[in-house]
Amino acid sequence: MEASGRQLDPGRHEQLAALLDDVLVARRTLDQSRHATRLGEQQQLRQALLDALEAYAAALAAAGAPLPPRLRSEIDLYKGLRGRM
Image (cartoon, rainbow, N blue to C red; front, side, top):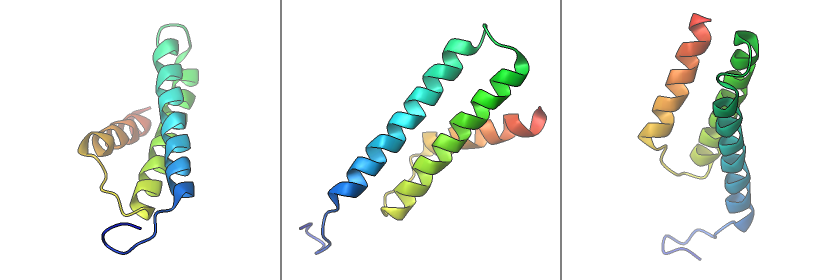
Protein backbone atom coordinates (compact mmCIF):
# COMPACT_ATOMS: atom_id res chain seq x y z
CA MET A 1 0.00 0.00 0.00
CA GLU A 2 1.24 3.52 -0.74
CA ALA A 3 1.65 6.12 1.97
CA SER A 4 -1.49 7.88 0.69
CA GLY A 5 -3.53 4.75 1.37
CA ARG A 6 -4.10 3.83 -2.27
CA GLN A 7 -3.41 0.30 -3.42
CA LEU A 8 -0.65 -0.14 -5.99
CA ASP A 9 -1.88 -1.68 -9.21
CA PRO A 10 0.83 -3.83 -10.79
CA GLY A 11 -1.27 -4.13 -13.94
CA ARG A 12 -1.14 -0.37 -14.41
CA HIS A 13 2.66 -0.45 -14.27
CA GLU A 14 2.72 -3.19 -16.92
CA GLN A 15 0.31 -1.21 -19.10
CA LEU A 16 2.42 1.94 -18.83
CA ALA A 17 5.58 -0.03 -19.61
CA ALA A 18 3.94 -1.58 -22.69
CA LEU A 19 2.70 1.81 -23.91
CA LEU A 20 6.13 3.35 -23.38
CA ASP A 21 7.63 0.49 -25.38
CA ASP A 22 5.14 1.31 -28.18
CA VAL A 23 6.38 4.92 -28.12
CA LEU A 24 10.02 3.83 -28.29
CA VAL A 25 9.37 1.44 -31.18
CA ALA A 26 7.43 4.11 -33.10
CA ARG A 27 10.23 6.65 -32.55
CA ARG A 28 12.86 4.17 -33.71
CA THR A 29 10.84 3.20 -36.79
CA LEU A 30 10.32 6.83 -37.78
CA ASP A 31 13.99 7.66 -37.20
CA GLN A 32 15.18 4.71 -39.30
CA SER A 33 12.86 5.61 -42.16
CA ARG A 34 13.56 9.34 -42.43
CA HIS A 35 15.74 9.03 -45.52
CA ALA A 36 14.52 5.73 -46.88
CA THR A 37 10.79 6.29 -47.34
CA ARG A 38 8.48 8.57 -49.25
CA LEU A 39 6.70 11.50 -47.64
CA GLY A 40 3.37 9.67 -47.47
CA GLU A 41 4.94 6.79 -45.58
CA GLN A 42 6.66 9.21 -43.21
CA GLN A 43 3.32 10.87 -42.51
CA GLN A 44 1.85 7.49 -41.59
CA LEU A 45 4.79 6.78 -39.29
CA ARG A 46 4.46 10.21 -37.67
CA GLN A 47 0.77 9.52 -37.09
CA ALA A 48 1.61 6.14 -35.56
CA LEU A 49 4.07 7.85 -33.22
CA LEU A 50 1.52 10.51 -32.31
CA ASP A 51 -1.06 7.81 -31.56
CA ALA A 52 1.45 6.00 -29.33
CA LEU A 53 2.41 9.22 -27.54
CA GLU A 54 -1.23 10.14 -26.93
CA ALA A 55 -2.07 6.65 -25.63
CA TYR A 56 0.86 6.83 -23.22
CA ALA A 57 -0.14 10.33 -22.09
CA ALA A 58 -3.73 9.18 -21.49
CA ALA A 59 -2.51 6.23 -19.42
CA LEU A 60 -0.29 8.53 -17.36
CA ALA A 61 -3.25 10.84 -16.73
CA ALA A 62 -5.45 7.89 -15.75
CA ALA A 63 -2.76 6.80 -13.29
CA GLY A 64 -2.69 10.30 -11.81
CA ALA A 65 0.89 10.83 -12.92
CA PRO A 66 2.06 14.18 -14.26
CA LEU A 67 2.74 14.52 -17.97
CA PRO A 68 6.41 15.31 -18.55
CA PRO A 69 6.80 18.65 -20.37
CA ARG A 70 9.00 17.09 -23.06
CA LEU A 71 6.29 14.53 -23.80
CA ARG A 72 3.68 17.30 -24.12
CA SER A 73 6.05 19.19 -26.45
CA GLU A 74 6.61 16.12 -28.61
CA ILE A 75 2.85 15.55 -28.89
CA ASP A 76 2.37 19.20 -29.87
CA LEU A 77 5.17 18.94 -32.44
CA TYR A 78 3.65 15.94 -34.21
CA LYS A 79 0.17 17.46 -34.08
CA GLY A 80 1.62 20.55 -35.75
CA LEU A 81 3.39 18.52 -38.40
CA ARG A 82 0.17 16.65 -39.12
CA GLY A 83 -1.63 19.92 -39.79
CA ARG A 84 1.02 21.13 -42.24
CA MET A 85 1.07 18.06 -44.45
